Structures are given as structure tokens and as C-alpha cells.
Length: 57
Image (tube, rainbow, N blue to C red):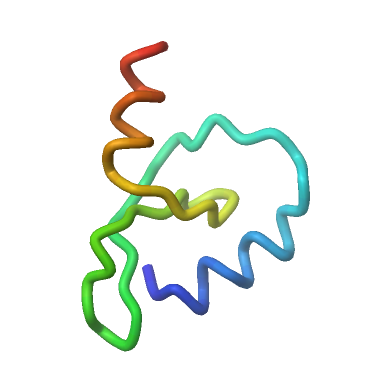
């Protein structure tokens, strides 16, 4: 998902809770940022942060 699209999703989602059901790679102008973004709420995080969160489930 492009960084710009993720930013728009975050604005639309607001501060509602999200369990981040699906995360995909984040891109900026077609270049992989190395981070991942939730397709539902648009939150961007490192792969490590999402990995650690999934381990806690």
C-alpha cells in the first residue's frame, strides 16, 4: 500500500481500536519503506512491531 493511501485511511479510521487483521508492505513512490501497514486502519509499523503483537495473541 502506498504511504499516501495509508495516511488517508488513518484519517478516516480515527482513534477507534483495530486488531490489524491484515498488514501489507508500505511503499513511498513505489519504493518499499521497510515498514508494514494495516489495510483496515492505515497504521504503519515496523515488521518487528507487528510480529511481536502477533506473538502476544
